[in-house]
Image 1 (tube, rainbow, N blue to C red):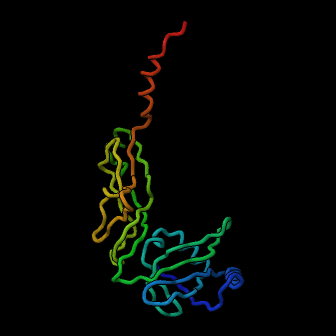
Image 2 (image 1 turned 90 degrees about the vertical axis):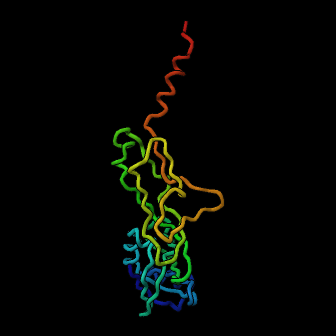
Image 3 (image 1 turned 180 degrees about the horizontal axis):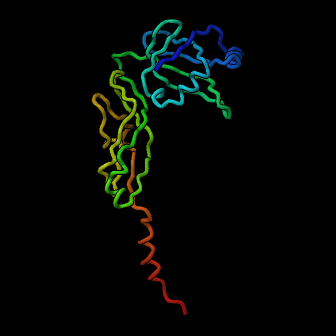
Length: 203
């Protein structure tokens, strides 16, 4: 995807307020071989781009005053109650340096799983994105989790999710977050019956 941006010379609260009134979003681009630069982006085009999932997890082509930059979206600041982007941060991409990103998870084939189709299991998506590290050339738009063979009672952790070539999950310390759980609906109902039967008869 492409982003068109221009450098801005005026900074500060007043300058940013005037930019927003003019339909622009103040932002910054940093990292890589260049110096940090204050930029402005058209609000409407940015607003619609932010509604596209891949805009958040792909390497973007930025046209900055006619010069090409490869960047990642790093931060978005929204207005507290309006559908308005207040500020945007981009990071330059260096092809030879590993990047760390959170990418969305796509859950596939749950409807054909015997646990769901025959056993009526409930598949709960605990995580909707996974943090990964890789070279820019290996950055996937999403991580696919195949649920066609899950069983009732199964729990899938991040370390058990197959990663594309050249991609590693980022795990902090000993944590291994749960991505998916597969449970039987109404599992507590069978356990309540014996307890009820054990109650003493009323006189």
